[in-house]
Image 1 (spheres, one colour):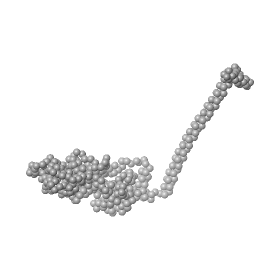
Image 2 (cartoon, rainbow, N blue to C red):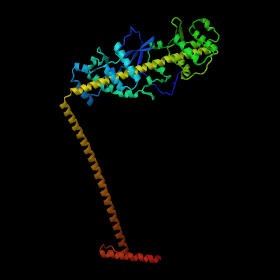
Image 3 (cartoon, rainbow, N blue to C red):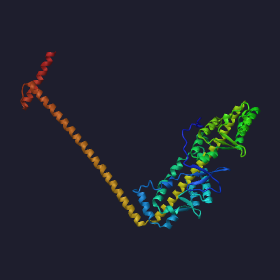
Image 4 (cartoon, rainbow, N blue to C red):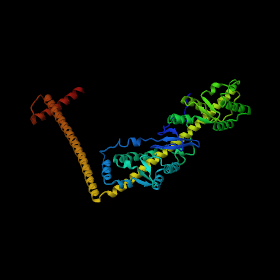
Length: 458
């Protein structure tokens, strides 16, 4: 059975991080873009951040752009030592820039803790950035000799800072983001996102349920649903059977259903339960607990041992979901913190570079360049304006020509009407002469003709 959303939420973004191993404090070695993440006091996992910014460092560079051309010209004016100094900044300056950029106090606190972790353990989480021996953010020297890499960081990745901060969902009540909001909403589907981001070692570890943890969940469950004394004893008996399911004496107990505990293996010595690390099996357990996670606080009963076993499975589902929910929030918070610090750091180094760039430029050369650019822009504007004017003139000439044609056509129509009238008059007067005398005579004849017609009609 597949579990569904707790709330009407169509999608949840998948983490761009992966949980790739279980950490041993002394033995673990961390590679680029990796840090330890404390799930609880007894469990530390290795978190792998997305390293596409390193792999695709110079893939999207538009070398024909004016920005790239200006950057390369300026880059070539600095020697290696100058670049090393420009591409580094103090931790204090980064923290001050964080205060300007990030509104959520929870995010700012997380960034501060993240920086302390980097300083203490020297993790390479922000590759290609490091915190050097002086306690300053700096770009690794192996990247400084590649201007395309630096350009990609400054003008492609750093440009995402504002859009990323704007995309972070915030609480309506205050300036906190949803991950650091005091009012936390849980979604059933979150556990699947965590499961998909884990390797098999992490899955096996997270599906291991400690006896004391399950007992705490069970006690809270019994208290919340106000089980009567008899039903409570049944549930506790079912809990006891779970840790002694290998004992055949319990299998013949009336009402006990061994099939319900299939996929669960108890270890009495270490007092924990191994749950089958299968997605469908885990989904079934969490689905059993779904109504309880949603709202359920009504009174419940367990009058048979089989029903009591069902209640134990619900408690295991609750325990698993709470564990997955904790991991999801921790992973997303670390992921968001890492992205914020990465974008803020490279954006601040970009500002450093641009300030140094203006210091390197010759004033007269810069002024001449600006004047030339202004002249070119002005000429282009004049050309566009002239082009629009010519187009307008051609349109006006065409309109005037059409008006003249219409006037000529009207004059021709009037002339045709006059000619027709004259011909009609000649026809009535039986004369085809065009002299004035004939015209006058024709008019008189027409008048007499009309008068005679009117008399005859009357």
